[in-house]
Each structure stands twice: as structure tokens, then as C-alpha cells.
Amino acid sequence: MKKILIIEDDPSFAKVLQDRLFGSGFEPVWGIDAYQGLILAKSENPDMIILDIMLPAGGGESVLRNLKLGFKTRSIPVLVLTASHDAELKRRLLLDNEVAGFMEKPYDAVELISTINAILQKKEHA
Image (tube, rainbow, N blue to C red):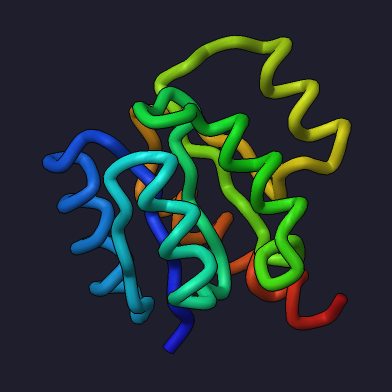
């Protein structure tokens, strides 16, 4: 079972996402802010991270920077799932290869699971 770390500050959104992931055969782990998310990324060794960009305790972009600096975390693929509709942010994160994918909230559940599977499959063949 693939472990997916969710770094999301909205508990009700995170709960729905956890249930959806669990129902699709994944093992979800949840961190409520940037600080806790980084600790869990190091301790839980997830196969993938779903990251909100607008987070307390540092923000999602600082999480990305810290993940890339960590020996244990730099190769973990990250899917940004955010309410931000900032096209420049999306372009920058995708073009700079900071993230494996970018989706906006509200998201389509089928598309989300399909995107996760594609990212994990690409990781296995890298």
C-alpha cells in the first residue's frame, strides 16, 4: 500500500481527502501545517506528498524548498492541491520541476486519483 502524506490546514478537507485516498487503496497520513508536514515527510517516508500552498507555519513554498534540501525527502514527488488560482505560481512550480503535478480546489475525485496513480507510476519507472 502506497503511503501518501497530505499537508493541509483545513481538517474537514483533509478528512474527506484521507477517506478518498484510503478508499482508493492508499495509506494516507496527515500533517496540519508546514512544520508538521516536514516532520512527517522525514519520519513517515511517504511515496508521495499532496501539498496545499497556503499553509500556516511557513507556507507550502517553504515546504517545497525544505523537501528539496533534505536527503531523505528530495526525491518524494509532490502534487500541489490548492485553492490558489495563481497561473504564474502554477507555471513556475511546474516549469522549474518543483512539483510533479498541480491541481486546483475544488478538484474532480476521479482526476485526482488518476493523477496520483500517474505520478506514482512515473516515480517507479524513474
